[in-house]
Image 1 (spheres, rainbow, N blue to C red):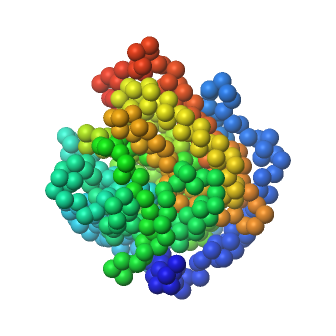
Image 2: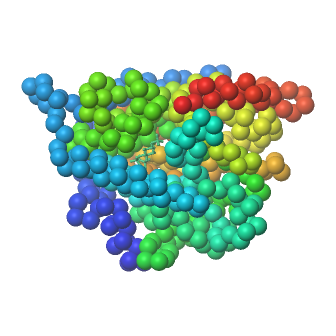
Length: 458
Ligand code: I3P
């Protein structure tokens, strides 16, 4: 890797001078209470969905909550001025970012509060979708689609890719040779790609071509997963029962940082979401927000959640915050494939291959996989593919430790519930497939069906 990349990455990641590096993280973890990883009881506690098809419910009652708690003596913790400065700063930056959305869709939404809430954690996958703004009754909400694009685009290509509302976080994506893209450098993600070169998961992750320095910034050079599709339909499913790292939780406890922007996002969806104290502070911590998101969606109940969908006709949806039940998810999948059960079968076969590879993967055993997504892509030709993307928050375990990925998470065991989620995802798609009719379509996607998911969406 170019020396410049390493130096810049540290700066970009906000790690310079903070002492927060991989070693620092390990120390934090060691400081956190750490029940033995992969112990026998965890195995026995595993409640992987039985082959009957009914997803088991992962025990979530032990999820540690993080709120801004009163100090001893009962009074509310006063939010330090610097914390509020952060809030204001963050809010301002976010406002600026929204106003910077241009025809290229670029924005500068960056957060520097929690550990890894920086450019490193901002490493998104090949395509991710993000809620932008609510913009009124009709055409609302509108979304930006963060995607790797082939670049530069001529007028015809632009038209062809008119659904692409480009690039998420400012400067995260850059032009690259045909069929490839550049993603803003993340040391964590780079290390994952390097390790994946020798792993059984290699066929299921974007091909990685090394680091590149462009315009004074460093990027990961990788294959554009959409390149071989014509007008693709894309769905992003975030995997696992947990979407934040244990160290984020530890840090939030040590020094809770109130986030007004997250409070506002919470209230937008559910005015009863925040506690009275959070209401009075008009802020929540990030892990608290993330936990709330997990509980509201199918992350906790199924071990995965739908983040966003872009369809070939240009429509994008990321209003799945309340898509929680298996039935809700089934409706979304039916809509995604336009009732074509053959696509569901293709996806099932890809998921089976992925599951087999995960079971053999040395990398998977040795990493806490947080915030990673499965990216479903198909087009009108019937071609369908599933990719494993987003390794910005995938973290190596200390030497000698491994994860099961299908046992309940308890703070300290670092389990992520990835395999449990995959199992439930497979069962969900099987349910769609079982509704197959003789003419090769699963129950038609009626307007009513679409509305069902909308009703359950935010
Ligand atoms: C965001 C989502 C992202 C998270 C982001 C959240 O919430 O959970 O995964 O980024 O944190 O705001 P939502 O989906 O409701 O918009 P990371 O995964 O990178 O932590 P952020 O606001 O600190 O960027």
